[in-house]
Length: 318
Image (cartoon, rainbow, N blue to C red; front, top):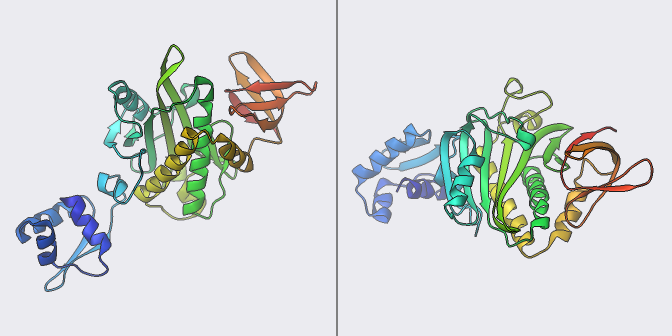
């Protein structure tokens, strides 16, 4: 009911009378008043003027279901959203839901994480109410060797979304970082459950520094607020990102990685750079010169030999 009231207020320019809300929702004006009071406690600023009615003045910077899903209009990603004030990790919660056969595109989001993590088990700083920390359960009909494409698709989607809501020009550091002026804005983590080369589900984890201040971030990190010089409404940012992820995911399901790869290369902070990549097999140094059809990075060593890497820890040397 409160979601519908907020929807009415957002759709109305100026005031909407209590009588009109009462007629449309078929509830008493006393019930409307109670709902308005509850919405105010949630942080909504709602003006009430006798003989005019109610007007939404401002919405809170909180991740509420009707702020995220209202007007989202996606077909897969975000149709089901689980919101938490705090969890140890949205990845863990999403993995649990994946094992319980939750629908494709189920989203788990938290205002804060006590044990947020990135690649290689690194901690992800998650100050409460300042960022977007979420995981998406995906059930793609893709072969196992194509799964790195999900990380690259997600990076392109994040970069496109960030650029669309700001004047910033984000770049992608292979395989999973979004950079603004060489500082880390967002990170992506993918984990999966597979049996006999059959993918059961993939968990796509994303952390974005939205309104974090410098003292809340680790060295080398930035936020939309710092880079853009103003605060952002996190629910609105979230909606734009979910729409962009859905667009990219549908392209992958239609086996259109070629276009995604082209856009990734255009936004790359890694290609045509000298890099050092470390993985379980050791360290490789050379020029990163291309991305192959599976999403692996191609490095030309000083000897002229080309090395293919599907994962690893990357340092940009020059």
